[in-house]
Image (tube, rainbow, N blue to C red):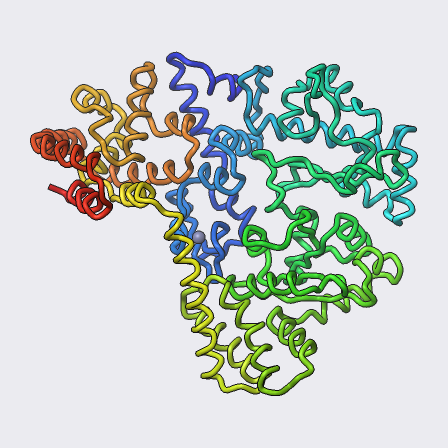
Length: 613
Ligand SMILES: [Zn+2]
């Protein structure tokens, strides 16, 4: 079979082959199977329901329709077909989503020869996979990795753990990986792109970024290595001047602030346990898994944040944050409390005895004390309450006032969630605070309101200084809904590509004011001009915006409902001609807008411009 990539990249009239190939990939990947690989789905009548992977979902809002091969979230409104789902979920472009799905369905693909234009993430994944394999082989086999093997042995990590997590070693030479790239056909340019090598300052070639380090490949939930963490060997000559830990830089595959180490290995244990425990270090994760406590992941040197929570929520409703006894300082606890308040997540805090980190505790005492700490985790609010109560020995009025402000001050900073469930959660929290601090509930509510108003006033002052007139106008323009005839034009053309030349003969893309619709129309015109079929499938090959693609799919569905599409298009074009008559008035308004000197006038003109005639 002809390679998918070469087909996608070929110009000229191979339209049918390319379109057919995309169709083949779609048909081979049933949307219920694909989505079901990420989200637990339950049949509900003719469709399937599950927790939405794209927002912090607490009731199954996510609907997958096998007949239409579409998904939709009734809460955050994300929707589309199997390809947009993979695009959004894996954050890849159309081409790579297609490639992933093709591979999943066992459709054989020919790899493209490397070219300078080749910047696709599929290639980056391949490069990272190759590098991970090199480091891993090195750790297992090479004499130069003796010190690294010794170090891991000292940390009591077994060969099985090393293999399961694909640990590696980057030799000290400084050009070890660079030397291996050439013979393997890996370009240094692409290695630089994934953050593994860098150009020497003198410009005389490349050097390895990871030297004399234990390598921890970081994998996404599809078990693909996307980046690396490296720990310098304590015996290394660089140990005193290089950072102890070093991560590969952020790339399109890897964002340090969002990544969770070990999630690929922790998923099934987490489902069983009903929660995931979050620790801080790679070796904490490794040792926990080695001793059979597998529901453990780590953040990458950053505190738990909303992006982490969104990922974790896909798998479990509860997260246990593990603090070393001395690290349970106020910053960590306050952040945990804010996340607890602002997410539909059961967030608990576990502390370890004797100031040990999880790895030391596990290595010294086995899994039981660690398991007990996880089992005895208490929710973030309770943790904060115990902390302030312990800190304030003065139980008098002043002490209680300080205590309540310490707790409410943190809550006031968290974004306020809407919805009945959150109202209940808040009610429960505030009654608990009142009870524990021996205050009236009304007093606590009133104080929270005051503190929130203070926070909002601060934010308003900040926002006022930030937003200029231009930003506001831009926001107004963006949020303007599309005119009906613009929307219908795309509905009819996406449903019936044969009509694109009819529209192109009469209507210029500039006549479409809505930016998204204009982009779609321009794309269809471009395909037509290039002698290809102006279909949505082919258009999506060029599009990098899954939201717009999902929108286009909707428009196409709507268009397909109308059977007399040529007649419909004639009416739409007539409407454009009619509107064109009033265009001079619009132009006049636009000129005035450009000349407008004050904000009020500009906003009024914008409003007039956007009012349908
Ligand atoms: Zn959603």
